[in-house]
Image 1 (cartoon, helix red, strand yellow):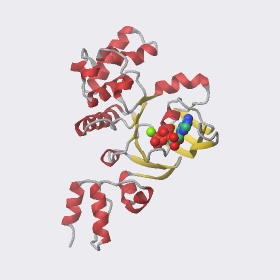
Image 2 (cartoon, protein in one colour):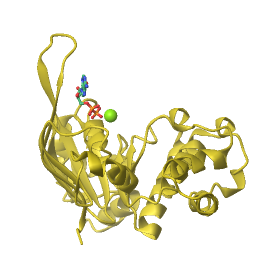
Image 3 (cartoon, protein in one colour):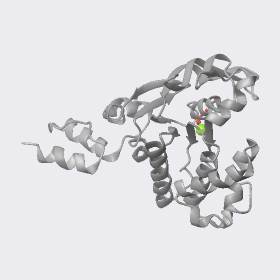
Image 4 (cartoon, protein in one colour):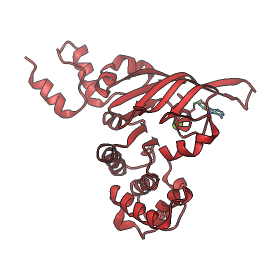
Length: 281
Ligand code: ADP
Ligand code: MG
């Protein structure tokens, strides 16, 4: 059995600019392995190549160079596309673009219907998936009347109903208010911990990134930093050079350290900061 659910080997993707007709690389030589059950976070500026990687993992794009394997299946092989899409589901930024039906449960049923799952099994999967994201009581509601966070949880239920091994979420909270963001992140964490589904979360929010098992930072089509959130964010100087933020408390620790206070910078939350301050002499 493959222990990697995703493996990108020397992945490059080039496109032709409409403006000047020249070729540009959106990705250049990316190597990335994602373990089964892992919660991976992808950070990086706009234009650094995050969505392009996501689309490769779902076989919406295929490499110009290199190879992407999803559960051992080469995404370039057309015979694999169906299995790849069934294995790795995608959730996008705008929940409104992902709703296809006028009733929540019909929306969630759409994916498994397309997979040709039989009706009684679909019924079961829809109910289970809605329960898993805490939206079962809304099953007969109209999706467009729900909050952004609820809509994204419905979108996640729709993917769960296809029983994927991996879910890629491309900035799923970018259009949500703080409470919607929290709901969605809590749901993602539960799916990962309780169901063992691999998560690849693309985000701009550092408080979300600290929830991952591992963070990779993209810059100009490649991975420039990676490690546990604690390791990556403690590199405050490097992160700032790339132009990315670190969590506020990590930055505070960094500033304290710069001003001569002997405090580590591997601090990710307020509790850890309080502990570190209490241990100062
Ligand atoms: P991110 O998701 O990190 O913001 P993307 O993966 O969407 O970045 O894009 C990476 C870069 O490649 C961007 O500069 C984007 O404009 C460019 N790009 C990717 N595909 C195309 C394409 N088909 N045509 C034009 N530009 C593209
Ligand atoms: Mg993007």
